[in-house]
Image (cartoon, rainbow, N blue to C red):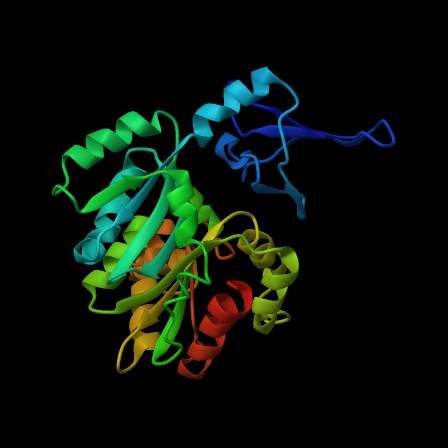
Length: 301
């Protein structure tokens, strides 16, 4: 049982109680990487490297307090809107809304199926929708949205060739960086050929990042950050030099260096420190297909 405290200032605090033994498991502690919106039913929160699934709220007061963060609007873009999806997501995030689910599918062309959440989400969405070209984004109900996440009906769109992997890290997803990344990648002339929002467990995060073990002194923090919440994975393609082109957009791995040398790069804008530097991108051309396959073929089944 987890109790969440919201002080008038500072980070959220949590305490944990073991119901089976009727003993305190964790005393009230600050959790700077958690927000109230993380505690949605069915979601996973990470507390001191432990991944816990939220299965319910203890009382009506808690449900009412957290429900405003988790009411959602489901939308589907039309194929002609594809190149403007980054701008759309950026506007949603600027309005204080966040992506709860997202997937790129082929439905008469490339379309994004998304669930948007946040406080006052319906009014904010109506305001944004009113400024869009009529018919470019459809609002659908939750049951229809589920059909677009049925991989037997809508298979993964990844091509697995001439590709690189871009991952918007969980902290950057939480802080509203997905729109920026989509917008800049598409504006650069690179192709976004697959997109999935997923939450890695610790074992999969460790396996994916194993190449950095013993190389980066903050490897453990890298793993913690990678499974701390939902991330957005993108297959990015180009006929030539895709890894180099994507790395150029991302900027230096070191955040301070990125801010100094490449202030317009993703890591300069979204990075907090070297373990939470905003985005992951494939380092070497030879690794592109392997990394894309691990995410879109092994994990997204």
